[in-house]
Amino acid sequence: NAGVTQTPKFQVLKTGQSMTLQCAQDMNHNSMYWYRQDPGMGLRLIYYSASEGTTDKGEVPNGYNVSRLNKREFSLRLESAAPSQTSVYFCASSGDRIGSNQPQHFGDGTRLSIL
Amino acid sequence: QKEVEQDPGPLSVPEGAIVSLNCTYSNSAFQYFMWYRQYSRKGPELLMYTYSSGNKEDGRFTAQVDKSSKYISLFIRDSQPSDSATYLCAMSVSNFGNEKLTFGTGTRLTIIP
Image (cartoon, each protein chain N blue to C red):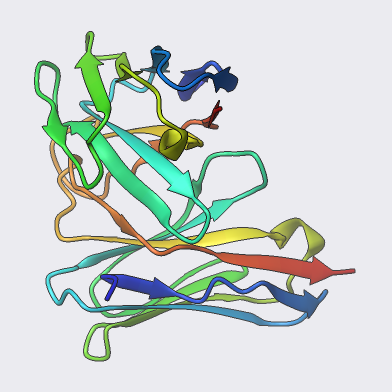
Protein backbone atom coordinates (compact mmCIF):
# COMPACT_ATOMS: atom_id res chain seq x y z
CA ASN A 1 0.00 0.00 0.00
CA ALA A 2 1.83 3.11 -1.26
CA GLY A 3 -0.27 5.72 0.61
CA VAL A 4 0.56 9.21 -0.69
CA THR A 5 3.10 9.40 -3.53
CA GLN A 6 4.77 12.63 -4.58
CA THR A 7 6.87 13.24 -7.68
CA PRO A 8 9.50 14.43 -8.19
CA LYS A 9 11.43 14.06 -4.92
CA PHE A 10 13.93 16.81 -5.81
CA GLN A 11 13.92 19.65 -8.33
CA VAL A 12 16.05 22.70 -9.07
CA LEU A 13 14.49 25.51 -11.10
CA LYS A 14 15.61 28.87 -12.35
CA THR A 15 13.63 31.98 -11.47
CA GLY A 16 10.72 32.37 -13.87
CA GLN A 17 10.46 28.72 -14.86
CA SER A 18 7.24 26.82 -14.37
CA MET A 19 6.71 23.42 -12.83
CA THR A 20 3.98 21.05 -11.68
CA LEU A 21 4.32 18.91 -8.56
CA GLN A 22 2.34 15.69 -8.69
CA CYS A 23 0.54 13.89 -5.87
CA ALA A 24 -1.46 10.68 -5.90
CA GLN A 25 -3.11 8.71 -3.10
CA ASP A 26 -4.43 5.17 -3.11
CA MET A 27 -6.47 5.28 0.12
CA ASN A 28 -9.76 6.38 -1.49
CA HIS A 29 -9.55 9.65 0.43
CA ASN A 30 -11.91 12.49 -0.40
CA SER A 31 -9.75 15.40 0.76
CA MET A 32 -6.27 16.36 -0.37
CA TYR A 33 -3.90 19.14 0.70
CA TRP A 34 -0.71 20.89 -0.32
CA TYR A 35 1.62 22.30 2.35
CA ARG A 36 5.00 23.94 2.32
CA GLN A 37 7.50 23.51 5.16
CA ASP A 38 10.10 26.15 5.88
CA PRO A 39 12.55 26.39 8.81
CA GLY A 40 10.95 28.16 11.78
CA MET A 41 7.58 28.40 10.00
CA GLY A 42 6.23 24.89 10.35
CA LEU A 43 3.79 23.44 7.83
CA ARG A 44 1.64 26.01 6.08
CA LEU A 45 -1.38 25.13 3.96
CA ILE A 46 -1.19 26.34 0.35
CA TYR A 47 -4.38 24.88 -1.16
CA TYR A 48 -6.74 22.08 -0.34
CA SER A 49 -9.47 20.09 -2.04
CA ALA A 50 -12.26 18.94 0.25
CA SER A 51 -13.66 16.66 -2.44
CA GLU A 52 -13.24 15.86 -6.11
CA GLY A 53 -14.10 18.92 -8.18
CA THR A 54 -13.49 21.51 -5.45
CA THR A 55 -10.41 23.49 -4.45
CA ASP A 56 -9.89 26.27 -1.92
CA LYS A 57 -7.10 28.59 -0.87
CA GLY A 58 -5.18 27.97 2.30
CA GLU A 59 -2.89 30.24 4.25
CA VAL A 60 -0.25 30.95 1.55
CA PRO A 61 -1.80 30.51 -1.94
CA ASN A 62 -0.08 33.35 -3.81
CA GLY A 63 2.08 32.16 -6.71
CA TYR A 64 0.47 28.71 -6.87
CA ASN A 65 -2.37 26.99 -8.70
CA VAL A 66 -3.84 23.55 -8.15
CA SER A 67 -5.83 20.97 -10.06
CA ARG A 68 -7.82 18.11 -8.58
CA LEU A 69 -7.53 15.87 -11.60
CA ASN A 70 -9.65 13.06 -10.15
CA LYS A 71 -10.23 11.53 -6.72
CA ARG A 72 -6.67 10.15 -6.57
CA GLU A 73 -4.60 13.02 -7.93
CA PHE A 74 -3.97 16.60 -6.82
CA SER A 75 -1.30 18.68 -8.56
CA LEU A 76 0.39 21.94 -7.56
CA ARG A 77 1.68 24.32 -10.23
CA LEU A 78 4.20 27.13 -9.97
CA GLU A 79 3.62 29.31 -13.03
CA SER A 80 6.67 31.57 -12.59
CA ALA A 81 8.97 30.29 -9.88
CA ALA A 82 10.54 32.75 -7.43
CA PRO A 83 13.39 32.18 -4.92
CA SER A 84 10.86 32.69 -2.08
CA GLN A 85 9.19 29.47 -3.21
CA THR A 86 12.27 27.43 -2.31
CA SER A 87 10.84 24.98 0.20
CA VAL A 88 9.84 21.39 0.91
CA TYR A 89 6.35 20.70 -0.40
CA PHE A 90 4.15 18.04 1.17
CA CYS A 91 0.94 16.56 -0.12
CA ALA A 92 -1.54 14.99 2.30
CA SER A 93 -4.90 13.27 2.12
CA SER A 94 -7.69 12.35 4.51
CA GLY A 95 -11.29 11.17 4.76
CA ASP A 96 -12.28 7.85 3.29
CA ARG A 97 -15.69 7.77 4.96
CA ILE A 98 -18.29 9.93 6.61
CA GLY A 99 -17.56 10.38 10.27
CA SER A 100 -14.90 11.21 12.76
CA ASN A 101 -11.25 10.64 13.52
CA GLN A 102 -9.80 10.88 10.06
CA PRO A 103 -6.29 12.26 10.33
CA GLN A 104 -4.22 13.44 7.43
CA HIS A 105 -1.62 11.15 5.85
CA PHE A 106 1.44 12.72 4.28
CA GLY A 107 3.76 11.93 1.39
CA ASP A 108 7.53 12.19 1.74
CA GLY A 109 7.77 15.60 0.09
CA THR A 110 9.30 17.36 -2.89
CA ARG A 111 12.42 19.40 -2.19
CA LEU A 112 12.35 22.40 -4.51
CA SER A 113 15.14 24.94 -4.97
CA ILE A 114 14.65 28.09 -7.03
CA LEU A 115 17.88 29.77 -8.14
CA GLN B 1 1.17 35.92 17.71
CA LYS B 2 0.98 32.47 16.14
CA GLU B 3 -2.11 30.39 16.82
CA VAL B 4 0.10 27.47 17.91
CA GLU B 5 3.41 27.92 19.71
CA GLN B 6 5.99 25.13 20.02
CA ASP B 7 9.54 25.33 21.32
CA PRO B 8 11.77 24.39 18.36
CA GLY B 9 14.51 22.93 20.56
CA PRO B 10 16.78 21.21 19.78
CA LEU B 11 16.26 18.89 22.72
CA SER B 12 18.82 16.19 23.58
CA VAL B 13 18.21 13.56 26.26
CA PRO B 14 19.93 10.29 27.22
CA GLU B 15 18.42 6.99 26.21
CA GLY B 16 15.85 5.75 28.71
CA ALA B 17 14.84 9.22 29.89
CA ILE B 18 11.29 10.55 29.91
CA VAL B 19 10.74 13.20 27.27
CA SER B 20 8.15 15.96 27.53
CA LEU B 21 7.15 17.94 24.45
CA ASN B 22 4.66 20.79 24.63
CA CYS B 23 2.51 23.18 22.60
CA THR B 24 0.34 26.10 23.57
CA TYR B 25 -2.46 27.54 21.47
CA SER B 26 -4.66 30.61 21.45
CA ASN B 27 -7.77 29.50 19.50
CA SER B 28 -10.31 28.10 21.95
CA ALA B 29 -12.26 26.54 19.06
CA PHE B 30 -9.61 23.82 18.61
CA GLN B 31 -11.03 20.51 19.76
CA TYR B 32 -8.90 17.87 18.06
CA PHE B 33 -5.22 17.53 18.81
CA MET B 34 -2.56 15.53 17.06
CA TRP B 35 1.10 14.74 17.38
CA TYR B 36 3.08 13.90 14.25
CA ARG B 37 6.59 12.48 14.12
CA GLN B 38 8.82 13.48 11.22
CA TYR B 39 12.10 11.73 10.48
CA SER B 40 14.73 13.54 8.45
CA ARG B 41 13.79 13.80 4.77
CA LYS B 42 10.43 12.10 5.35
CA GLY B 43 6.85 13.25 5.64
CA PRO B 44 5.07 13.65 8.99
CA GLU B 45 3.44 10.48 10.30
CA LEU B 46 0.59 10.51 12.78
CA LEU B 47 1.59 9.43 16.29
CA MET B 48 -1.34 10.38 18.50
CA TYR B 49 -4.86 11.73 17.92
CA THR B 50 -6.94 13.04 20.81
CA TYR B 51 -10.20 14.83 21.34
CA SER B 52 -10.98 17.29 24.13
CA SER B 53 -9.18 17.28 27.48
CA GLY B 54 -7.56 14.34 29.21
CA ASN B 55 -4.89 11.73 28.61
CA LYS B 56 -4.44 9.11 25.91
CA GLU B 57 -1.82 6.41 26.13
CA ASP B 58 -0.34 4.27 23.35
CA GLY B 59 2.61 2.14 24.36
CA ARG B 60 5.46 4.42 25.45
CA PHE B 61 3.60 7.55 24.30
CA THR B 62 1.09 9.59 26.29
CA ALA B 63 -0.75 12.60 24.90
CA GLN B 64 -2.22 15.06 27.35
CA VAL B 65 -4.63 17.90 26.63
CA ASP B 66 -5.56 20.70 29.01
CA LYS B 67 -8.12 22.84 27.20
CA SER B 68 -8.58 25.19 30.15
CA SER B 69 -4.91 26.18 29.89
CA LYS B 70 -4.77 25.75 26.08
CA TYR B 71 -1.79 23.45 26.54
CA ILE B 72 -0.99 20.04 25.10
CA SER B 73 1.86 17.66 25.86
CA LEU B 74 3.41 14.50 24.51
CA PHE B 75 5.35 12.28 26.91
CA ILE B 76 7.73 9.58 25.70
CA ARG B 77 8.75 6.99 28.29
CA ASP B 78 11.90 4.86 28.06
CA SER B 79 13.10 6.94 25.14
CA GLN B 80 15.03 5.13 22.40
CA PRO B 81 17.49 6.38 19.74
CA SER B 82 14.80 5.53 17.17
CA ASP B 83 12.65 8.27 18.76
CA SER B 84 15.09 10.88 17.44
CA ALA B 85 12.98 13.00 15.08
CA THR B 86 11.10 16.27 14.85
CA TYR B 87 7.75 16.22 16.65
CA LEU B 88 4.96 18.43 15.35
CA CYS B 89 1.77 19.26 17.20
CA ALA B 90 -1.33 19.95 15.12
CA MET B 91 -4.88 21.01 15.90
CA SER B 92 -8.22 21.39 14.20
CA VAL B 93 -11.68 22.69 14.92
CA SER B 94 -13.52 19.76 13.33
CA ASN B 95 -12.78 16.17 12.44
CA PHE B 96 -15.03 15.29 9.53
CA GLY B 97 -12.20 14.27 7.25
CA ASN B 98 -11.77 17.59 5.45
CA GLU B 99 -10.56 19.71 8.34
CA LYS B 100 -7.73 22.18 8.04
CA LEU B 101 -4.89 21.60 10.45
CA THR B 102 -2.85 24.26 12.21
CA PHE B 103 0.66 23.07 13.00
CA GLY B 104 3.31 24.05 15.49
CA THR B 105 6.79 24.65 14.12
CA GLY B 106 8.10 21.34 15.50
CA THR B 107 10.58 20.31 18.21
CA ARG B 108 13.72 18.55 17.11
CA LEU B 109 14.52 15.70 19.53
CA THR B 110 17.73 13.67 19.77
CA ILE B 111 18.03 10.61 22.02
CA ILE B 112 21.66 9.98 22.94
CA PRO B 113 22.63 6.26 23.26
